[in-house]
Image (cartoon, rainbow, N blue to C red; front, side):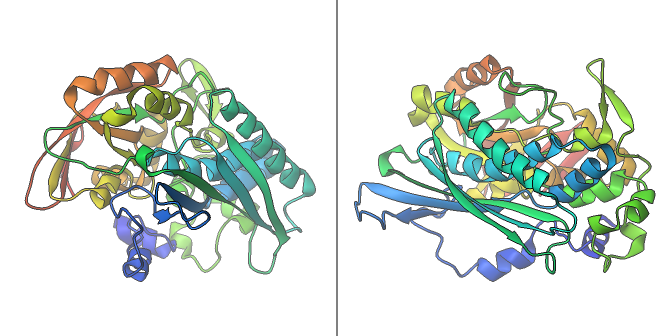
Length: 390
C-alpha cells in the first residue's frame, strides 16, 4: 500500500500540509527563519529583549504508553511521556539560543475511566525530577503548575501537553542564517547519554502512529480497543508482527519492543547549554529534526542545496519499523529522524569543537553534510539505501 494512502487512512500526515495551509497567513514573528516564533518583549516593552512561547504535546505516544502500562503494570513509561512533551517544547526553544529561565505549564486531559490517579501522579512527579536533572547541567526551568482535566467524552485515553515561555536578550538569539559553504554537524538521537538511565532507541515524539500500527500485531486492536480511533480502516490498524513484550538484542542487552519505541525523547539541552557558553557566535543555524524529520531544514533556509551524505548508520529501532512496514526509505527519512535529531550549521573550522562537546556527554556526533548554492531550496540525502531528493 502506498505510504501516503496508509497515513491518510490513519488520519495522520507526514507533511502536515493542511495545518501549514491554515496558518500560512499568520504573523511569523520578528525573525521568520528562526526555529521558533520570536515575539516583541510585550511584558516590559524593552527593545533589547524578546519573548518566546511554545506549546506541544507527546502526541499519540501516550496511546502506546497506555498499552504498555496495561500490559505490564510498568508505571515508569509515563515518566518518559512527561519528558517527551517537555522536550518537544524546550529543545525547540533552545534552537534559537534559549536554554534557561524557562517557565513551564502543563495541560493534561484524561479519560478518568481508563487513566488512574497513579498515572497522573507519575507524570507530575516526573516533571519535577526532569527539571531537577536539567538544573544539574545549568539549565533552569521553572514549573508553573498547570491544568489536569477529566474529559473522557473527547479524549480516548490521555493527552499530555506543555506550554513554555521565556524572555531573553535579542543579542543572544540564534536566527537561522544557512548559507553555502557551511557544514552540518549532526547529533545522534540514540545510544545512552551521560544523563540518561538506559539505552535510548531515538524515537522522539514524531511518527508514533505509523510506528505503533506498522510494528504491532493485529491482536492489540482487540486487547486494547481504546488505543486507536475506530473510524480508522481496519486494513491499517496494527498490521505488524510484534508483541509489546517481544524483545530485541541491542548492544548485548535485551529490550522489549514496547520500551524501545517508548524511549523518551532525548533532550539536547545540556549539550546546547555548553555549546552556547563557549561557541554561541559561531553557530549559524540549529534544526531540531522533529515533524518532517530530515526535511525539516527546508522550512528554515532560503535558496540553498542541503546535502546530507554522511548520516549515522540506521539504528535498530528504525530498521525494525522499516522492515515491518515496508515503508520506502525516502519516506522513512521524511517521517522519522533516523538517528539524527539535532543539526548545527556552521563554518567548517568550528565543527570539531561542537562534536567534542557532544561526545563529552556520550552523544555521538559527526559531520553529516554541507550546504551548497541553489536557485531554490533543495535537499539531497545520499544513503546506503539510495539517493533521495526533496
